[in-house]
Image (cartoon, rainbow, N blue to C red; front, side, top):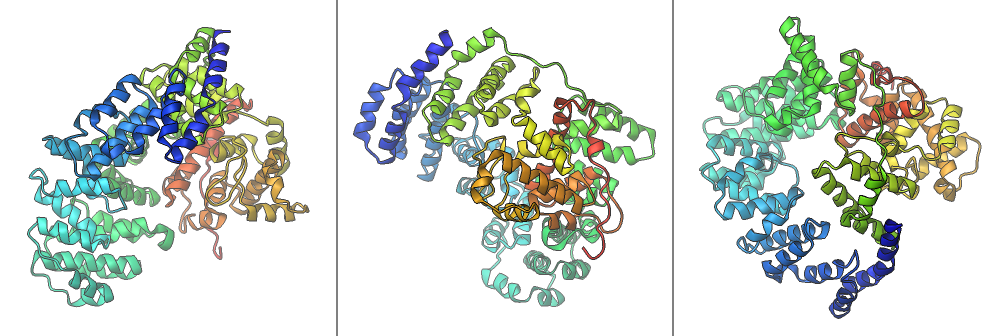
Length: 634
């Protein structure tokens, strides 16, 4: 009864939230002040004050931020306010005001981490740079805060000549000539944009007559081979030996790394090419950035080059190497060796991995001959439910949902509440929240919570089975496994019937309108756009389409899963050309990271759903048969 009172009280007091949000969005500070007074005792009462402070954040004294964080300790909006304050101050090049605020940011994203690192570095903590090698070496687009941090690192005596060379070569390879000019200056090299522009016109031509007498010459040469590789990989592969001829050993390796890296990152355009792996092999001995090491590893996996894979993993940072996926692949590589010591090491790694229930853990179970069965499920007790009703973080999330607040606010509070419980290893509280969310039909947040327990689990909350009759019947009619259909649905929409993707896909199975039209035609029905938001139609069309793709793609669930996400033609193009490969190799080498993760999640989900649907002991390997050759003419 107590919990009901608390939630109804929260609802009664907090319905002003949306009016206060309107006042905040229109900049009506006077109205906000009134809401701050009238809502101060409500569970959502800190929002008007947060919006007021946020209104002119850059001009607030740090004491105002600290006061808010101390009155609302470990809260989602105190964390956000503190992190945003640090960013605003760094934008103003004010590195002293945010110092006392840093301690109130406990879960920064990448941009916030870079802003905080700049503050720490300016306040005399030079060791901070060692934590941000990935920022230093990345050539992808980064936030301004990370660019600013990298500039600070450039002038630090802690960055060695080798560090600076590695950064320069990465920028040259990626065609970032402006950044390369600045990095070259820190090495005492004078490179000019005029010369870069001249090379860009005809890089292949430049390579044939390129001078090779100075560090500046070598820099231009690396830039040139990068431009060739970018436009015509085969030309770069056939001219890299000529480019490397007569240069110092490390420059030769940098040239090979350039071609190997670009070949490894342009598989979508160029397909897989074993010469790319050879180029990466030839570049071994030069330090690898985290991204380069992963590209090297994936190329090695694709071509079953197990010794190259061991070298690639060995080149990773310690934390990267300890990730479950690289531990799994290290064990896979050791398993291929003929000596008993390597095989023993492989078994030990697999055995340790087999304790978990994620994708690589399930794969490892197969390698040590274990099948997978559900462990005992923890049911939240009345005491857990009572504690949930008293938890301020979860209360805020439920109250926001009750008043129909925007999803960004609801999800931020929910995810924060889960995180706070996770940090305390309070699985019981997390599962109480997951139970309440499941009972409300709020499956996506229930899944988010249940996925994050450490010692006690409840797979019914983590792997919800709404609309079970529809899913099972439509799957069986389409000739596909309902556990797989559920696995895909969980990944696509988390059972949010109103889910809409940025490209217009909708409903439980996130079907594109064009796909739905095609399916309707094949099923002899008239297409009705409104029908897609009908959960029954959405499941019927989705399972039919999945079945169609599976039939087109060698009857392989792995290929069909990739095809559902990236399109059947791409999934087919990624099939091997010369010999079949294991499904885990195919999945790990999918060139689109979104599809790569998608396939892993869906196949893992299918295993769990297999158990929940009463299909008996599970093995992920049985769902992931070898991937056959791409048929000629496809």
